[in-house]
Each structure stands twice: as C-alpha cells, then as structure tokens.
Amino acid sequence: MRPTGEDEVRDAIADAIRAGTTLDIRGGGSKAAIGAPRSEARVLDLSGLAGVVDYDPAELVLTVRPGTPLAEVEALVAGRGQRLAFDPFDHGPILGDVAGAATIGGAVAAGVAGSLRLSGGAPRDHLLGLRAVSGRAESFVAGAKVVKNVTGYDLPKLAAGSWGRLFAITEMTLKVLPRPPIAATRAVEGLDPAAAVKVMAAAMGSPAEVGAAAYLPAGDGRSMMALRLLGFGPSVKARCRMIEQLLGEHGAVVALDGEEDAGWWERLRAPLETSTALWRVNVPPSSGPAVAATLEPHGARWLFDWAGGLVWVAFDGDPTLVREAAAKVGGHAMLVRAPEAMRAKVPTFHPPAPGVAALEERVRRAFDPAGVFETGRF
Image (cartoon, rainbow, N blue to C red):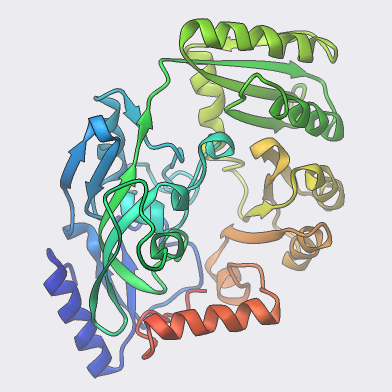
C-alpha cells in the first residue's frame, strides 16, 4: 500500500485492524534489512507522502513529509546555508545497497545520527512537532512549529527512534541550524585505544568546541585519532591551534582540511563494510576500550565514534559475547547487519531490563492496542 495522504494512511490502518493483519511501515526501504524477516506483514509504504510543506530559513524551521528523500532535504537546507544538526546518514551502503533510498522520515524514526551527534544532538533534540496516525487509526498532532513549546506531552521525543512501532508519521517539523562555513580535522597517529579515549575526553572538555571525535585502530597502517572543528574561519583557526597544542604532547599532528577532512569522516558513515555482521554498541565513552579489548581476541574488528561512546563492531562470532561485553560496562548492543538466518534468531535490540520492558509494552499498547505495528521485526 502506498498512500499519498493522511486520510489514506488512516484508512489503511483501519482496514488492517478489521482484518487482523500487521503493517510494516517503510519509507525508502534503506533500513528494511534491519531486524527479523517479516514476510506476513503488509508494507505500508510512506514514500508517497513526500514534499516540503513549509520552510522558513529565517526561523530555522522546516516542515516536511516523511517520504521526502533525505538527500533532497539536505540539499534544500544546504542551499540556504543550513544543515540538519543531527548529521543523519544513509544506511544503504552499510546494508549492501546503493545510497539514495533513505528518507527523512526513516532517519528520524530510526534515530539516525552521524559523528556530529556528539556536538549537535540526536533527532529527538530537533524534532519540534509532528502529525501522525496511531494504531487506533486516529490522527493526532503533537508538538508545534516553534522551538519553545511546552503544551501537552512531548511526543516528538517518543517518536524519534520508535522505528514505526507506535504510529505512522505523516508530517514532521524540524529545527535546522546554520551550516558552518569551515570544517577542519586535526589528528594524531599511533595512540592505543585507552590513550585515544583519554585524549578525546580532554579535547571535549577543552574550550576548543570539538564537533566530532573518532578513532580508527591500526589495520594495515597506524591507528588514527581525529578531532573535527567547525565554524567561521578565524574561530576554527584559533581552535585548531588549541587542539594542536593538546595533541602535540602525544605525537606529530596531522592536519586534514577541505576534501581530506570530508573524506575522513565520510568513512564512518559505512563502517567496517566488508564484514557480514555489524553491531552498534553504545557505552560510556571511557568504556569503549574495554569492549574492544574483550571482543578483539575473538576476531572482532572495531572503531570508535562519539569520543568512544559509540563502538562499531564487525563480528561474525557468538552474539552473546557482544551483548555481554556491552552490558558489563553499562551499555547496550544493537545488531545492525547480519544474514537473514541470524536476524531471525537474534533480537535486534539489546534485551531491556524487566521494568523497562514492561513500560515499553504499556506505551506501545497505548498507541497500538490491536498490535497493528507488531510485525515481529524486533
């Protein structure tokens, strides 16, 4: 089903309730291979709900329909010297497809944020309002088209990262930010993981206003820890000097500017792409080295983003090892990419604590009492 308006979405959900069927909400399908196979669910394709409803660059507010391609949204705001602050990216290359299918609705519903999330926040921090249809086949509005809004429940926070399990979003309003005219990266080679995390922590605590921090371990060459700075020319230049002084204590500083800067960070949008299974492990930044040290002897490859708080792990071994390594340091592990047989057996999300699981269940039943969106994916 490919509705082109909110009324058609509501009708499709009402029909599913009456028929006792489930609906798999999709936009461009770029993340369809995440989660368990779900052949019995009907696809509710929201790519027909596309286009910009309103864009006010002066107020930094964009209202758009969820099926609008992510690349189009990014090009639109870039044309006005602005950007999506949460730095979303296309999962197509990660999952073995070409880029270009991702939609803005899918990015927000999956809570997708790139390296600049460290300084710019997540989708939930920039989703101001939305229109949606619940699993009761009821339309509703949440939030507003203003930044300072305190009316009612903050459902936009709940929508971002909900993966289409609560309701079908039909329109969303996002806060955008000015696009920094200059980006520069300063890096140092040869650090071990623990030292790299300490340096990244020191940089994040400095006045240099670091936008992103990541670490690539030694592979065929030497390891590299990189810090990215964004802003106006004189400011970036001055802050680069601060970072160079900090890094100079640990080795020769490598300067990456222009295309070199963009290329280095682009590598993190499709990490460890040659492996079969890929895990996204969220931990306290200081605990990233412990996760790497636990899994590396078993053949895992990995890298750090978000100053060590995000560990991408390529590992085809026992999934229990990844989950235990994450839980041991108070983190959680999400299975992003795996063969279909593995996805059918291994839950995508880290098993929540019993109290959290009970709360999640109550929230889902409040929006979707008939289980229309319970496809078995997660």
